[in-house]
Image (cartoon, rainbow, N blue to C red; front, side):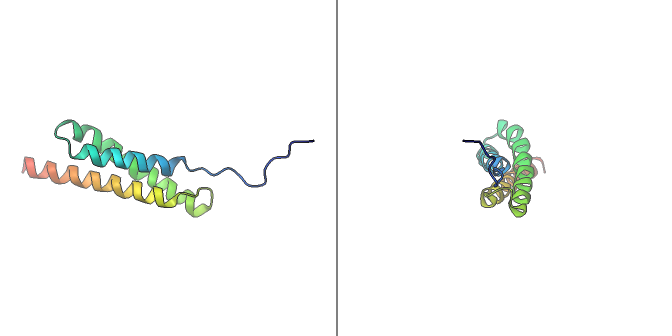
Length: 92
C-alpha cells in the first residue's frame, strides 16, 4: 500500500481563530482601567489584521472560518473604539 497525498489542501484557519480570540481579549480588556489600554490597543490591532487575513483566506477558499475572522475583526475594532472614546472622555 502506498501513501498518496491528499488532493485537497489543508485549510488555513489559524488567522480567523486568532482574530476571534484576540478580539475577545481586546474587548474585555478595553473596559479595565489603566492596564486595559495597554493590552487592548495591541490586541485590537492584532484582531483587525488577523481578521483581514482570515477573510481574505476565506474568499480564496483556503480557509473555512470567514465568520470567525469577521467577528474577530469587528470585536477588535469595537475594542479600539471603546479605548478611543474613554481616552477622549478622560483627556478632553
